[in-house]
Amino acid sequence: MLTIERHDMILGLLSTHEVVSLQLLMDETNSSESTIRRDLSTLEKDGKLIRIHGGAKRAVEKHRDVALAIKTTKFVAEKNEIAKRAAAIVQDNDCIYLDAGSTTLAMIPYLHQQHLTVVTNGLTHVPPLVEKGIEVYMIGGYVKSSTYAHVGVQARTMLDSFSFDKAFMGANGVDIEHGLTTPDIEEASIKTAAIRKSRNSYFLVDDSKFNETTFAKICDLEEVQLITNQNNPYYAKYKAFIK
Image (cartoon, rainbow, N blue to C red; front, top):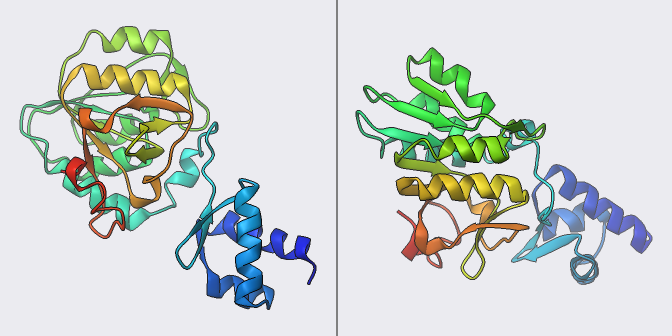
């Protein structure tokens, strides 16, 4: 098999599997370990993947958001675990902010508290909240086609009208040095504004988001608390920031 064919096959596997093992790549390409390691090194230098212990993972899209329809199919068990733990923090009579995103969406079935008020910029969040009989406020603004998040000046202006007991947020990147980041600068602005209006803010992030940095900074890790899955391999490194 030609080198270019192996590279195409490796990238093809990463388009359907976020992480691939060295053994899988060896089996699929019928190549030696040393050959695959050289391929991974070349593709990493080209910014097409990220090498990890025992394999490789897909390179982060630093300037482009993943569509919500795709996000909801990935790391489902981890997101449900995180969502359940986050929902347990909510108390009766709380006013909370739910950021747009697949993990905050997964919180809604676990919200059984009494007399909740929820403010959200996630269009997909409104129907299940209303169905549960929860009082909901939807902030206005431009609707992103990829994530169904409301962003822009109108959304930020409406956020100024509220104060929250707790905010539950999402992010695409979590990094010790660069903090919490997201690909869209407009969405980063909404997230930052929500944090400033909340007494306590929590970021719901599965392990695929750790040691990653995308385009727009939201805040430093010291400003918030992280809620993640217990089998997160980065747990020890980020322990000081995890609730």
